[in-house]
Length: 279
Image 1 (cartoon, one colour):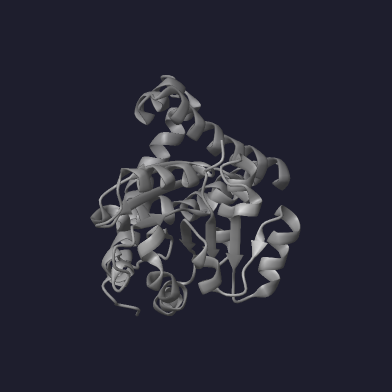
Image 2 (cartoon, rainbow, N blue to C red):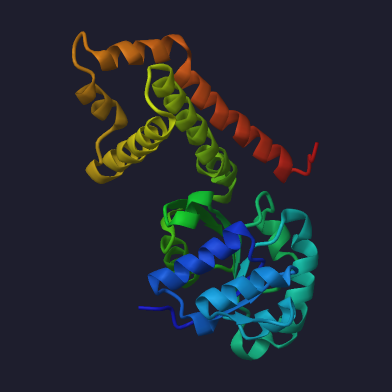
């Protein structure tokens, strides 16, 4: 059943457009109740023609009739976008109340988002790019004025393109380091597995398809069975067999430690960016 709400989307780049497509495909938002705006009109035109969503003349016009606003602009553009979009709405918010603001601007804290927005309920979201194929992993943290009903809306919209978890804001940078950046780590792993297959004689297209499907299948086993990954690993590793030989090689190469350090390094950098270090 679709949400009985009008959703304004400010910014329809890769992630913004992926979310809009996911909502329409899942039926959680009716196209005629989605209003989009972007500084690049061609992006808006693509979604309007493809999905039947509506175009707004500007961000203020989009927000004026919205119950939910998705802020999907680049982090340096957040301040200007909020001032332009919410100034007129705040002046009229006493009658209907302010809309729910969902921000996917990486590294922009709730305090900065809430500044100057009065009683506007704000939820900060960290999605990831597999949302484009409805296999995303998102986490969100709510601001001071976001209540359970606002969190429920966020769960519905984000759940249309994958899984969703609520966390404390202090943990969102760790989410960035794990699931936000994580797809890139796994793309490297898929590429490396395929390279290994090619080295052992497999055609490139077959090796890549096998590698990608193997990663997909292994992830699905973890999610669907609820088993600890270590137990699933042990079920594959027969005594004296091929898998344990491969696992021993991974351990000697520091595979496990490398992934742990990748998440830690990405989280550390997210902390730096959140504190204003743009170097």
